[in-house]
Image (cartoon, rainbow, N blue to C red; front, side, top):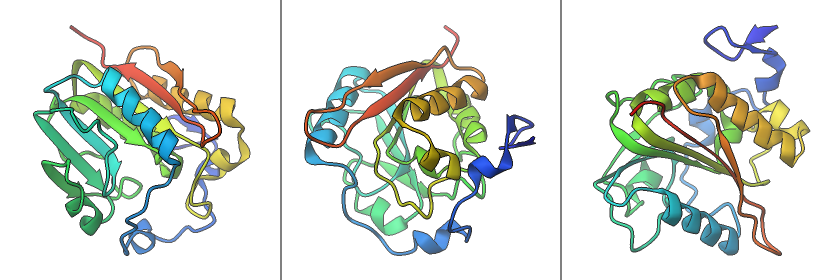
Length: 212
């Protein structure tokens, strides 16, 4: 057994990908498209509406040109961290952004307890060092802050990790919950199914930062 990072036990083949080249090449050109159905986007926005703190500081992890936040929502800060600067510049909800390849460097360029919520939408399947990334998410959350990871069944297959492509939906949910459980500093993950009828499915795994 080898690790996915930080000495944690995962077989290395879990995180192999068809396209093993540096991610910066794949994401070099902007993709100003959405990756789930409109009804699924609405379901994700509804989940954000219910769970994200009004006036809070939000980190949109693995962000793009749209964050799916509720239009009426007001937040003190919406920071975006993603792979393509043009996509991030085009996102009207972001107050600031940073370009970072988390597979090359899983650290987050933010201070401890900087955010009240961290969201990651339809991107977790691309992380090759997920536990390290979510340990960083735990670090930048305030006590009681929310980590919310949402995903569907769509993906760029050449960049998705091998284990993701072999698992069914229930086991993908368990895998993400395991990431959060192993990250440290987070309460027991909660699984949420918001799949709309006749559209792309939507699952989420949520956990709060421990502490007062």
